[in-house]
Length: 246
Image (cartoon, one colour):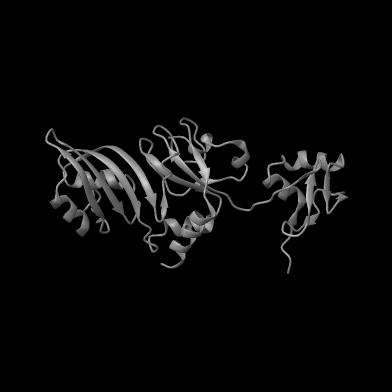
């Protein structure tokens, strides 16, 4: 059975305007389906088999979009907000019309890897506690982080609300005698302010936090804060596989 959809919905999703604007394009004879002028913007078309053009240009239809963003500090992980700038505000209009949303959240003062998509199934799988998708962070910490802290994180620590975290892996990159540490921490869940609260539980304070990876997806080191790109086909397949096999 062929999968069909309304012509105006397809064109709107492909960035050719609102449904009312598309209706005008159809009336002007600028929309063609299989080389014939479309007579009704609500006609059913098949995006896989029908050839659709607008003003002579072929329409490229995609249902889903997958974006890797290097989230900067000062921007919130939301689709809209009345006070603060959101991650959606960083995107170009050509991708905004896909209505992407952030998969999970990074705190306002946290930077690094954030996936944005309109694929609800993939987002659900990545965030599901049952999938145990690891997330790795780089952090700068006020206080000397010790091997004992790593052992505590590996056992699970009680947060300020008595929730006990799942086992986490701590790598100490550098400590300074003046009382500072640089670390990487891999966690298997995403509780509110979790990394910061885990260090609070062992008497230390996170002063800088950056997410480096989510499952097999690694932050592109060439992306400056605020920049984004679409996932490669290989990256997408790795993400899908990581959530499917668990």
